[in-house]
Each structure stands twice: as C-alpha cells, then as structure tokens.
Length: 336
Image (cartoon, rainbow, N blue to C red):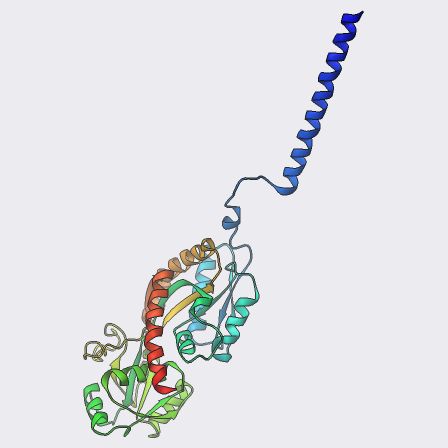
C-alpha cells in the first residue's frame, strides 16, 4: 500500500510539472504572436513601395522637368519596375520652397520625392529658401540638356570671341535678357566671370520674354534651351553651346570649353529624396529610373528633343552638384 501511494505522488508531481511547462510554453507562443519573432527580417525593405510614389515637380505642368517626370514614371509603370505608380504633383512657387515643404510633410520613406534640376543649386546659392543639399539624399540624374547663348541674326558678331572682344573694349555696352536668380542669369554670369566682360541686364522671366526682347531689339543677348532655339528657327544666331560636347543638331556651334572657357551647364534631371530616406528605398527608385532612362523609346525622345540620355548614380550626382554649388556661390557673391 505504501509503495502504491508513493508511486501515485510521484506521477502526480510529474503531471503537475508538465502542466506548468505547457502553461509557460503556451504563454511564450502567445507572446510571439503579439510581438512577432525576435529575429531581424528584411520584410520592410522588400515591401517598398507600399503605396503610390508622389513625384513633386517645383514647376507648373508642361515644362521639361514635368514632362520628363511623367514620361519616365509612365515607362516604369508600364514595365512594373516598382510595383506602384509614380504620381506627379506640381508645386511651383517659392523658389522651390513649396515643393520641399510638400516633400517633408510625409515620412522619409521614399514615397514622396522631388524631380528638379540645378535651379535648386541656384536657389541655395542665392539663399532663396530654407533648404540646402543636406536636406536631400540624391537618387540620381536621368539625363539633361544644355543651353545656347544667342544674339539676333543681324548682329555684327559671328563668333563668341568677337562678342567678348567688343565687351572688353566697351564694358556694359550690350544688354542681356535674364530673370534675376534664374539659370540664364547664372550661366551668363559664369561665362562673364570666366571671360572677363560685363553686360547690362533687362528683366525677362521666361523664354517668351527673352525671345520678345531680343527679336524686338530691346536686348542683344539671351540664353535659350537648345530645343527652344531650334524651334524658333529664324531671327536668332547661336554663338556658343554650354554642353561638354557639340550638339549633333547644332554641329557648327562650338562649346565654351573648346573655345577656351571652362564653362559648361548640363542642367540634369535630378531625382531627390528626403535626407533620412532608407538606402533600400533609394536603391529601388534608382534601379527603376536607370532602366527607364536607358529604354530605347526614352533615349529616342531625348535625342529628338536636344537632350542627352544618361544615368548618373546618386552619390556621383551629389558630388557633381556640390562642386557646381561652390561655383554658383562665387557668382552669387558678385551679383548680390
């Protein structure tokens, strides 16, 4: 009897021990269900993008920056390179401050980015907005285009050297149509500083204004996108092209570099994310954009519109932009 009783107690103790073990195991499973597994997982990175990507353009619809953003976004959607559409939102005004403000409203997760160009650098050099390069992470450049400096067709200058010589002998004798703080203003000023001449300014805030002033005889010089110049056709004469190599559509127009002036302006299509955006999201965006800019249809469009199709990765693009910004700051010091 005593032996049976002792075996009973032993079995009862073992059962109680098992019940407690089962209880603790159940609690552990429940806890894991709440907090998830304790191991690191790349799921978050793999889920990007989780929703449509807002592409903020700091200009009104219809310009080059807007058109390129929409075209590349459509190509990416067409091929499923991101899994979510890119939705272009125009936020002009405030020298880009409106666009930057919109970008910063959401989380820095890659779902709100900016498509801009080097007007950003001019705004920074002129201190026109409460932002700087430190506010952005560079995704990359998707091609770009360079402008030409022109005079009227009947002007007595057939080369840039002739015009520079005239201005050195007669400072401020020629009128340049520019919008203060714009790309035409800064590119002309960079050339003037490099070549050692000086013009007078008349205000022209758009390409249409510059064209009207030059053709009407109220200005002598103006800067235009190569596509604008080619579309205009009559009445203008291009003296210099600011690309690094001659444009095939303008084979007789030399570059400033080949004329001995260390001046170029590529004005790239620049894609930017908030500075704290995860690298995984930036890499996903960059991969899709690189594929898009190398698509044969996109390449053909660029070349047919005097644009250069190329890809520059984010870090290299930022390095290039920082170098350009230092040059622009030096120019800004001379005009403020």
